[in-house]
Amino acid sequence: MKILIVAPRIPYPIEKGDKLRLFNQIRYLSRSHEVIVVGLTETKNSDISELTRCCSAVYPIYLPKSRIVFNVIRGPGRQLPIQVAYFYSRRIKSQIHQIIFQHNPDVIYTQLIRSSMYTRGLPFPKVIDFMDCFSLNTERRARQSSGISRWFWQWESHQVRKFEKHCFFDYDAQVIISEFDRAAMPLHAKHRMFVIPNGIDTGFYQPQTGFPGTVDILFAGNMGYYPNIKAAQYLVEEIKPLVARSLRWQIAGARPDAKVSRLQRKGVEVTGWVEDLRQAYANAKLFVAPIWEGAGLQNKILEAMAMGLPTITTPVVNNSINGEPGKHLLIAKNPAEFSKAILTLLDDRDYYREIAENGRNFVRNHYQWDLFNEQLENVLIHVSKPNQAGN
Image 1 (cartoon, rainbow, N blue to C red):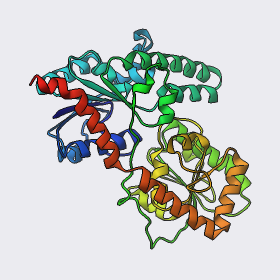
Image 2: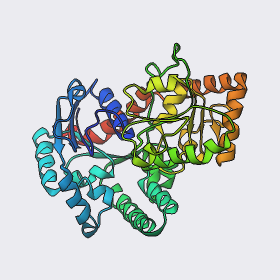
Image 3: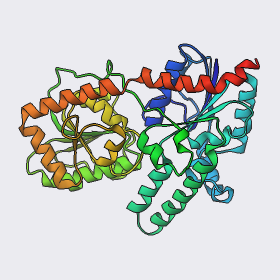
Image 4: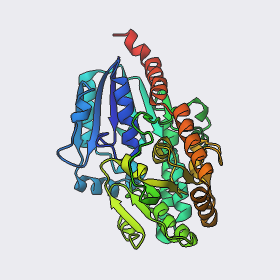
């Protein structure tokens, strides 16, 4: 089967959750199928070496920042959500269509509504990965904002909600990352969506020894991503003052926003890009993720748990992970509960080891890439059959 993938970003290097998901899907699908990848990039010289090892063709399409500004300005006039308009160019659409018709794929796999303007209406079997419920994400952002920012996110939320509804029926099958996100979709037909979570490579992410454990509290992720920025601020400004103990706190991850960088102070380290996050996990005692916004499945939580790092997070995050609170991970709803959970795990070594082991086993038993990617493969095969029969 020939699978052509259209993505809003070339899925390498992997520093975002959408790239992680697509890269692992590509690696799995390329074992048995011909895979062609078309993705946008904001840098002229994208590193596609890892992709070319498993794909028959990779097309990085340059999207300059000047074009992005123009796209965003024109978005409202086109009735497009900003996060869709950001990636959409008619010139690029023509270029992508030429690539698609040149390869004549058995099925097109579109990642995110951000790419859908490039594949809607094409005469090929098509599958879209919504990944997260974006309208839920923007609604949460609106509730957390004020003034002009609140007005903008309310408008964006309305536009995203409308776009998700219209986009849904343009595809033969739809995929989403969790039951919670599917339930939040603004669609009567959402029961038709296939829930395909992210996995974790438990051979890659596993407990490591030999690290000095010089960090007590770790939070990691893409630190330019708004929900992570807010979580980092919450961690240092709301939780840390309640922990009446001299601990070492670390915020690790790519592209830290200026608000995150300003959190660096005595006892708090902001690392920026870390080449191998496994070292950060292995050197920490606890992973604390006070994430209240965003949607989808948090890869950083799965990674930490797979590394045997006891994890404390929010009900919002656990809605998608579905771990058992108090057994696989700890859940906190406010700064006082986070503080109490931190001190409980640091002071009770037996309970600490129990949570670490239970969390790792939970991820190992429930989040395997091959299992979920096989489900995606079956969806693509099923959708492509009419086209294959005609070849």
